[in-house]
Length: 327
Ligand code: NAP
Ligand code: G4F
Image (cartoon, rainbow, N blue to C red; front, side):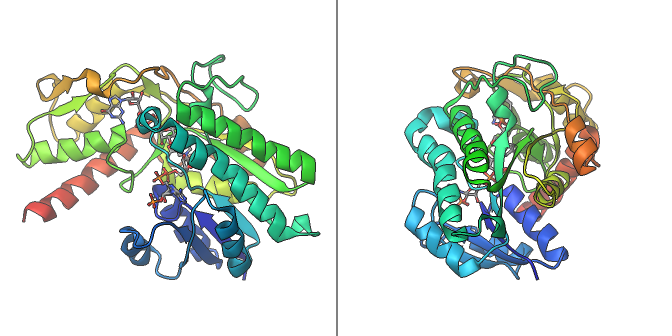
């Protein structure tokens, strides 16, 4: 039975990846932080077979201990402070967790592997946020990185550290440069879920408006369930490498509002949406659109869920969730 350790187990991707690996017959271990993490019950409900081990990405000794208990064949480093807006307010902490945390995990994994570096494969959750002020359209694995947020800068550090461990120590360490991916499990602080939750509440008559920031930014949005499959495929390759994972389509926040409101039968969303500078960012990433052709050619991966279907799925889920809450 192959064994996997996932950091970020309580997050959107950690949950989908756990389900995928368990279905493939893996024994799955998850790093969980804090002395009484409120999301422990969520993991137990979604994937009860996952064995949770306490630890934090900022604590190398703890990570080494966790690796020695889990004895993984594959390590998926998904843990991070992942909310871009928050990263300006907490730049130092974001650098420690989202940036230095990657080095901590790589180094703990190298020490765990000892003389046999081939005994373990490593996945790093890199991000399209690294492209920032994009230097090429669409963005591919060779596009120059130009991060625009403390989060993006931290991800660039983690990305190059992963490449460095591959080149310096021969570690099977791959980076997935994932573009935005969403689902009914997406945190409500991210714009898709913020919109789909609000639209559901407006439909049910329990919310009047949505307050947003920049409506013109464009993102390449896919479904998280599809994207975790790509992570697994990267670690099944004979050689480690870096891959862009994206749909190859881009949509603005306005397009998102169109689809979300249409799905509750509202054609004109303008009366329901207010903009507030509070949600504008000090430096914006205006346009993301990925070129996933390498992932398609090498991994045989392609996205299965289109943008419209994704947003409708999220609205339906939120309608069910919000109705249950008001009942
Ligand atoms: P998420 O839902 O925000 O989950 C983040 C996870 O990291 C949570 O489990 C969180 O645990 C954990 N974490 C935070 N600080 C930690 C620390 N100090 N030590 C250990 N764990 C810690 O993120 P996601 O959407 O699943 O994304 C997974 C990864 O992919 C992240 O690295 C993210 O930056 C990256 N990524 C995401 C996207 C996307 O569109 N979703 C795109 C590109 C890259 P708690 O529950 O304890 O807070
Ligand atoms: O949903 P977002 O917060 O996602 P963002 O910043 O693109 O980051 C996500 O994707 C990255 C991959 O590119 C990940 F690495 C990262 O961890 C995270 O998962 O914002 C998307 C866009 C931005 O342009 C933002 O300015 O939506 C715009 N936006 C407009 N109003 C808003 C809002 N974003 C949020 N969160 N809340 C608003 O009210």
